[in-house]
Length: 193
Image 1 (tube, helix red, strand yellow):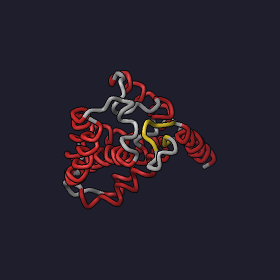
Image 2: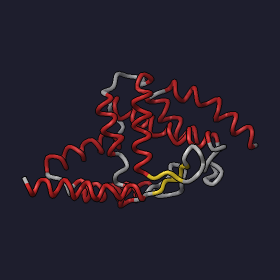
Image 3: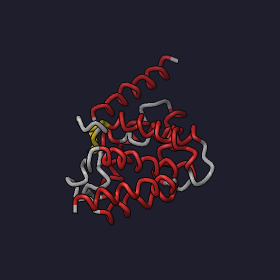
């Protein structure tokens, strides 16, 4: 029992580092950038609140677990903004190594379970993961809209880039949300052109 508890506490203490990983997205009040732990909490609340808009039936508890764990790899691999310029293959290898290390701190049964949840989210093939990915894309869009484009200008985001990197994922899992956001997005881009 002591060994198991020591492993669980080691994982939880390491997970605290997610609070120090800054993301590109600002808080809605524009006061500062959010950290990855705040993002994980907020996107879970988004999923819980917006679950009725999933295209297919989902297990909200499974979705919440995915969103709780989805960015934990950023402790080692860092946050790479969706509109940033980074090598996807290099990032995936870094995230896989981070998952090995971080989930490897846990007792074997929990390590396997958490890793499987994380992999399911990354693969985005199940209804739960498709919805989780959609919601993960919605929250930063709302933050950027609420902060007059937020970091979009910094990353040279265009309507086409936003549609390709964000809209396609949101439409796949929660098209009503993208449809609702699209007019605000269009208005913002028209206002800056």
